[in-house]
Structure formats: structure tokens, C-alpha cells
Length: 287
Image 1 (tube, rainbow, N blue to C red):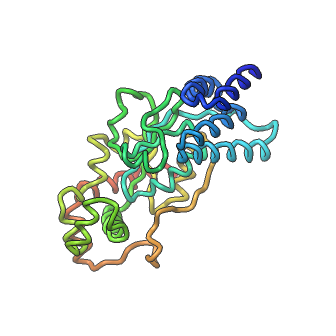
Image 2: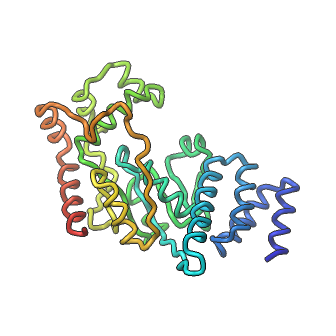
Image 3: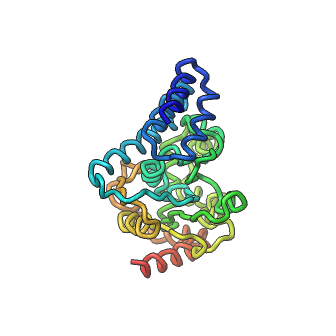
């Protein structure tokens, strides 16, 4: 092993990055918890400019170190299940990504589309050692490639999800042509909710799957209890991460709107309402 590590260091020192990266991928696939290999991959990813991948690796190394310090010789072998995590917009996926990043490190592949992945310095495709994929994609995307992986996701009350998406667009007018249009046209909440592609988003991301087709469906309104259930189901160590990407201008836990607006948004998202209620029922029966 020492010779292999030295050979990898030589490749990195001589800036043979692609060759070093390929060799590291193979080695990490065989030994995903090696501090030496993970440390070298940090150097390699940093030299390649993949800053997002570096951050994932550093989070994972910190997690392994803290676990070793806490549990010492009593630490149980860490088994990382193969997992497909569907991040439905405005359903807590940014916070949950931090949990997965801590648990999986470089074995986490983020899939938010080529443009977004490049912006964050993430790899564009899964690697041989990938154990978890998380991002904005429909639930059936990886059915053929990873048929036996755990399927997980989070949902949120559809009315709150729509309102959150609306205010997100208002806070980020330059993010896309769509957010620019929402701001330029000064759309009201109901006008935004009436746009076809903004309706029943959760149902669309489920892509014909049922709630019961997922091994875990977290509920944003029960965030910490959902995290505990996730770790109970998967057997992974509990990692509590606070909410990220929230609207900091909101004073209450939920958005407050008129009853008429509530009824209108619920009518426009009837499929999501039914899906959310099913997920909520299953969640409560599991706790």
C-alpha cells in the first residue's frame, strides 16, 4: 500500500492529474475509508479546480475523524447503502445534501444538470465509487443503472412549497430567464401558481412512482424527526444539519396567506395534496 501511495504522490507532484485521478478512483473504490487515499484525492480535486468535490471530501474526512475520536476501537464498520436521493425544489434538499455530503464524501454524486454542476465545481457524471446520487432529477432517472438502490426524497405541504418557490424567484431575479420573467412581469403569488409548469411539482418529480416505492420520504414540517427516521431506516450515523437556503425574511415557520389564496393553490395542486397526505400518513405510522 505504501508503494501505491508513493506512486500516486509522484503522479500528483508531476501534475499528471488525469492519470492520478483515474488511479485514485480505482483505489478508493476498493478502500473508500482510507485517510491517505482520501487526502490525496483532496489534493487532486483541488488541482483540477473541482472545489465542490473538495468540500465533500473534507466534510467526509471530518466526519470519519470525529467518529474515530468519539467511538475509538468500539466504532462499528461503516456501511454505506447505495442510494438515489431525489431533491424536489424547495423541499429541504439543500440541507439534506449537507447530511449526505458528510456521510458519503466523495462517494456522493450531485446531479443538478451540467450548468449547475460546473458552477459548483462538481463532477458531471457518477464515478465507479459513487454510492449516493442526489439532485434535481425525476425519480425514474437511475432505475436502469441502479435498480437496487434505496430511493429517498423529501416532501413539503404543497401550498408552502409553491409560496417558497415564488419568493425564491423574487429573491433571485437573475438566476434564470424564468426568474427574470417572474420579476419583470411582477407576477402575484396566484399568477405564479397558475403557471402550468409550477403546478404539482412533487408529483412530476415522483415520475409515476408511489410514496411506497421509496424507502424513505422525509417531511419538511417534521425535519428533525424525519432525519431520525432516515437514520433508523438506513442504519447510518445520525447527522443533524440545520436548514439551509431558507427565506431569512420570513418570521414564522410557515408562510401566511389568505384563505382564498390557500384554496386556490390547493386546487391547482390537487395531485400534490394527495401525494403529501399519503406521505404524511406513512411518516406518522413509522414513528
